[in-house]
Length: 157
Image 1 (cartoon, rainbow, N blue to C red):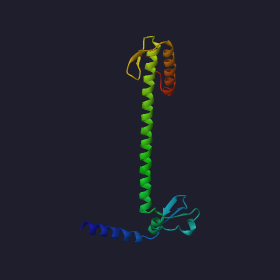
Image 2 (image 1 turned 30 degrees about the vertical axis):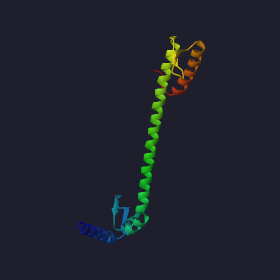
Image 3 (image 1 turned 90 degrees about the vertical axis):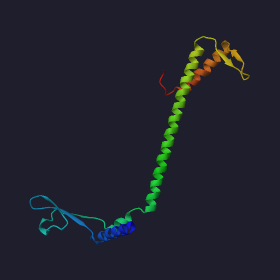
Image 4 (image 1 turned 180 degrees about the vertical axis):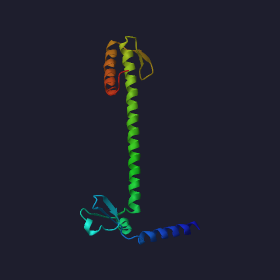
């Protein structure tokens, strides 16, 4: 029953659309310098400044409109572009968070190294050893470079 109603409604709309002739709108100024807009042409005596506007017929509008497949393809392209943009911004946000975290870690490590306290590290066998002065200087230099690399755009905390 619903299909029948939909078909009937579509048929009526189609008949109305095809029955409407091509609309033309006229605009002119009358003798009192008043602008008149009408669907009828102006009298020849007041045709000083006349403009004629014509609307497209439904057939012409349908011929110029993109097809359903084109609209679907455009919609899917916009969806894909939006998804790619969201993924890109999310990846940039993750990278910025990673840089921020690396910056904080490097600054803390530099602070510990420059404090003068004894620093113990573990070797590959898991044994603890303490840094001597040359190792400390090398670690400080390496950590300063890490701070400089990771904290470029980050404010100092």
